[in-house]
Image 1: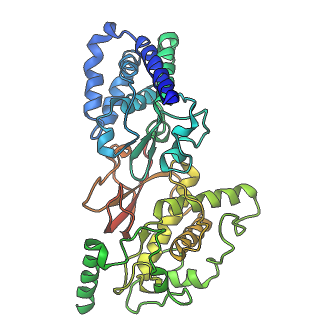
Image 2: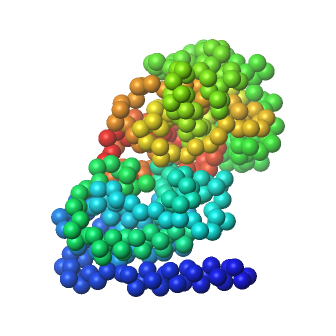
Image 3: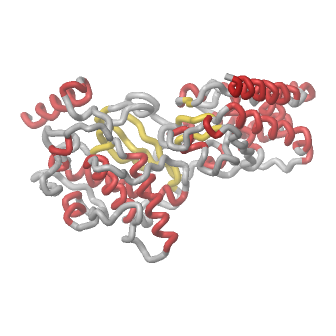
Length: 181
Length: 232
């Protein structure tokens, strides 16, 4: 019980820090509609929407980073993924930033079973390089990393936006395999 | 016509009432279905069944060729002496197995889904070709499900592994180099296209096959493996 409470307290602390690091996108208000439209058409027509965001990547990435939130589900079917903004925000960010991606470290190894489907996918690059999510190509379903990993990745993106985005050389990611899955 | 009716009845039983059929029992379970496999593991060709034009040998040839010898497996020695190729072939086998271990060819007469004697040769060849394409895609895109060679004595799983290993061994350049993605669907049930395709059409589809797995791809007799070309 004690260790569970400590883990929860840690997650709460990290979550608070992550909220504090959210970028201020008020200067880009005029572009918010395009990002909102992207979320609405992720199933049917996301490519034009992504290309639309590519025209003002700094503004779009501001909203996308701001939309990164912790995902409570461990596994998402295709239709469930559509409504989870964090997954599509990450895909959008990868796409706009020439496939940039951040990974997190699994601190509590017991949170992922390497022999289970979820662990097998998420631990492929090791426990210190766990992605926020991974998508099974042939079924288009996704598995999501534990909260502690998600929070690290959200913080990384927020730090990136705060310190690098303004001077970043935005470029579209060329391969679906590097931004979707 | 009688044969057609019998097959339809059998399909109905197979997918409608698991209690009356061995077909819906998950792989790995002690089904007893291994007793339905051919005694010598060989298929007999079905007269009148047209075989698809394919560089892949028909199923009976595969089974007679020795390619399914027990030596194929985690330490696949059959490929080129180059260690990288062996590793690649092995990963291709694990990928092909992980993605298709719940798939079976269409039957040519009513029998257990696990009875190789009852597999339609053209459908079995088609499925093996799909596995070869999967192994080729694995070299270009590692985003697939990998499952190790079964360690137990489950004949059904071991047989599926051998087919996947053989298919991976035959991987070369049968599929175009820009075929890097695939999707598995039950025709008319559940998702029919992946989000990552962005609305593009499949370049080539293999099927229909029987899917006993269930889960994300619903069980049924009209399972297709769609390969996509040039998705960006």
